[in-house]
Length: 308
Ligand SMILES: NC(=O)C1=CN([C@@H]2O[C@H](COP(=O)(O)OP(=O)(O)OC[C@H]3O[C@@H](n4cnc5c(N)ncnc54)[C@H](O)[C@@H]3O)[C@@H](O)[C@H]2O)C=CC1
Ligand SMILES: CC(=O)C(=O)O
Image (cartoon, rainbow, N blue to C red; front, side, top):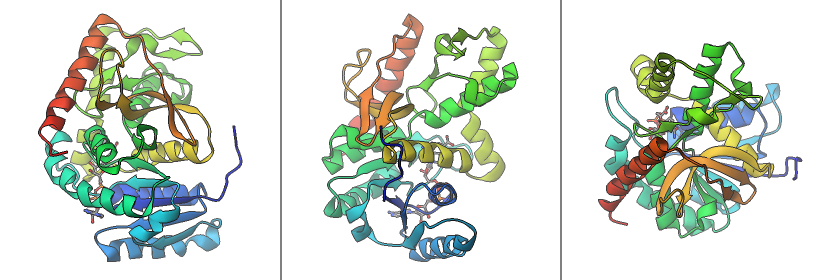
């Protein structure tokens, strides 16, 4: 495992709430040597890059600029956070038509210049758009990753931590499936130091509902979610760039995974410099299996309506 930070370039496509906060997180934590911002609104990318550059005297040496697709040539990771976001009351799936449309040109532009990097998708619906990116890029599946249920699992761990009075970093717990309304909690795997955690039915219901509905709550309150997703993307990017081999609940192509194939869903994966090095197959209980398969069917149904 290489723990040294090597020279690296990350390109972020879409400099709205998610893209910019991710850029700022990478900038503050000095995760990369070069950060390129691309947006359909060139002035927005330019302004964000300039604003961050003015912080350089207070931080380290990350080189940031507003670029174009030719800058993807030397990129190790290309993050896609471009496109429509949910308005209050909209689901992630409601964004599919609008966002699948723009992925056509975004992926074409990326592969015109890059054949070796890792595409990391954040745009919603993230599992379906990761699958679209795989099909349109022709990249191997280990190099097309969605942020998946990493964010949902973080929310779950936070809420369990609140319930138990334990720091969420010490809580091990997983949300798997769609990053969206059909996701499922794996209560039987929730533990602290390998010790299973007990919950009342009422606590389980409250913790899971608050996990699943977190984005709706935040969007109603402030219009977008940005900080926690930026930290989740930073976690994935760092695991790639530092060749960590961390286990993260990202969205990946499933092949006969608990009977599910040919769809992207969030499950625990070993993430390193090659992208998704290994998909870890979980043993699911009967009810969990039924829910997981229902989540897959829902997304496959949506994918079948797309022109791929
Ligand atoms: N995967 C996850 O866990 C999360 C995903 N998201 C998703 O991320 C996406 C972005 O969300 P926000 O940043 O809040 O939206 P935003 O509206 O703040 O920013 C979107 C940006 O994309 C740009 N854009 C649109 N079409 C483009 C194109 N063809 N090429 C380049 N840039 C383009 C816009 O100019 C805008 O700057 C949404 O789909 C949202 O649902 C948001 C939070 C968490
Ligand atoms: C918007 C979104 O997908 C989230 O914050 O979970």
